[in-house]
Image 1 (cartoon, helix red, strand yellow):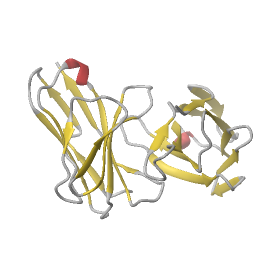
Image 2 (cartoon, chains in turn purple, brown; image 1 turned 45 degrees about the vertical axis):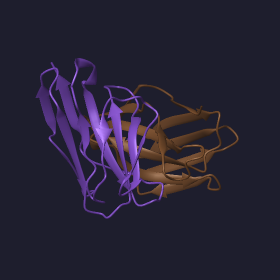
Image 3 (spheres, one colour; image 1 turned 30 degrees about the horizontal axis):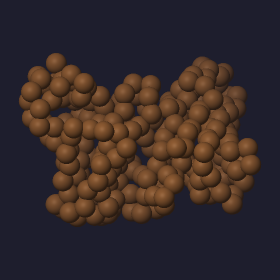
Length: 111
Length: 114
């Protein structure tokens, strides 16, 4: 079992609210990732970080932002949630090998 | 851009039989290929990685083959059990990103019937 934690597991929120999805890992991994996944669909990379103070956008356009102030913490923020943001958000980390370790995910519903 | 196709969205097999899942890819020659398992409402869990110079990899009841000529990987689960029911994802390293980024397929949902 990977030591990577996401909170909350489920979130139902109204349109226009600001939300932050938390992701923490205790493995000391430099590389961290955020994916978005809709039911029955592939994972889409929306943000990644190769170390502290390093963040990049992925290949799926997202209105979310991320920060990496500490190695173990990689939160994702939506300034103003919309129904189109309803999805599952998965956080992962890697030590630079090819393997990625995933958290359990946050299922977000925006009403 | 690279494209991954997993043979079917769903596969039903009888308990005790061998399940075979297919992953085909185009527009790229990956250095390695991985298989992950994903249960409903959970994140993927790594199962096996196979490199381009390896033909076959085994782990307990799991076997992966990698044919770089056909651009195909086969994932086998022998003596399948109902607990093997899950969605299995194929993933490739991305061009230009080294081992740091992956592209995932949509997955094949496996149901093992008792």
